[in-house]
Length: 603
Image (cartoon, rainbow, N blue to C red):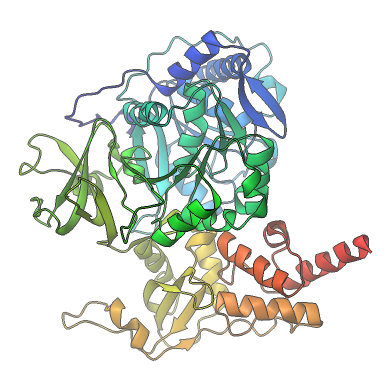
């Protein structure tokens, strides 16, 4: 099995206690303390531990053995922490799968991992890609009835796998990053010590569980005797709901990506979040402007966290200061048992103060990429000039190390980008576009909307004879990519620009003569003042020349952050919208109908 690939870490392990063992210790010492809080109810540590034991024993009866992969496809709820802890107790590694991801992407992940079991709910199961005998619906009584709640007799060590996260890849297929228990334990136990997390603390869990910030949100409170507060499914998209939950549930620790932090700071109710004592920020670059604005709203520490998926959530941190005069917020200094170097393209250290690639070593490194030894060898290297015999991870991030030991992020060395904390490989999108009939060449870049400054993906296409339909392109991409990785605009060029060496010159795309790829003509024009107002807002913020009332907001390139921009712009025009309008209704004609119905009910 792929999970039995040997670990090649040369660095010594410093943490032999695994996450699920630390949680079990809390259950033994404080069984009646509250572990998990959600709209569904609460779980005590005793209940969490017993149900996780039951699931582990049930998985064992289904043939799951240490080193296996178990896929998880769940919405956020009380079952989620139980399932994840139960899988770890069984000695397996969990593989989170987004229920909303395209079927082809889910099938690709299931195929790559050869997951022995898919843990899901009855309503979320998709029959494609998995033998029904491998499905486990945890919302059915037969999973639990009569199953012993005693801990399984399974030994798990620091070099065993804890989970595999799939991120955007350059070949058109997602790549699986294999994380080990020792690295995750090192990160979480460091955070407990650094931030003083205790049984009195509560942390909001709002990040999608396919994002490694969710590992922090779920397990940091549980290993220290605190409580996890689960946001409702989809709640991470609504800043007002997040602030209300932090206030009402007396949350003390909150993680947000910078793009969402910006909107949370606009919420009037933030001042009433009096229990809040730490805000963690990561997944994107934190701007100086946003950090300064933070301190005008909250008088609590703001921590900038840095860490690729391949380095166990985080490896560098920086606590921001309101009086800091630096032009850029540092990504900080290494946590315990982690080293960081700045190297040139020959894997030699650069002089102090000069820019180079950030390379990470220590216990936090992932094992590598599932089934891809070539990519693993490319990214996980040995650099005798700085660390003889020590395995290092090339982050691809361009940084500078300052005399005080702090690192400053300067950008990427490759074509990987981050939008709303989601890691996107532009070459993955380009590879998929070139598979569309009549598309000869494709280039995808990030451009910034003039109205909002929000980043968007834009695809430039060179085609063979005959028209290419916009709907065909979007339909093809949506079968393979999550919504955030689908370009918002497509432009046609007679020839994409080439460099003197005959390679695609993306820097020249902005000066290339192009025409927008028109949408289908069947979309209807707005029929009322409200629909016209919404169409105008969508057109401006999405940078789409023509919006029809049947156009899908997300197919036009909208996302959760742009949705908030539309809501604010609509509010300025006297129209009240909610994030749910976009994620449930998606089209102007349906959203306008909902707005009118709400207005009638209020009158």
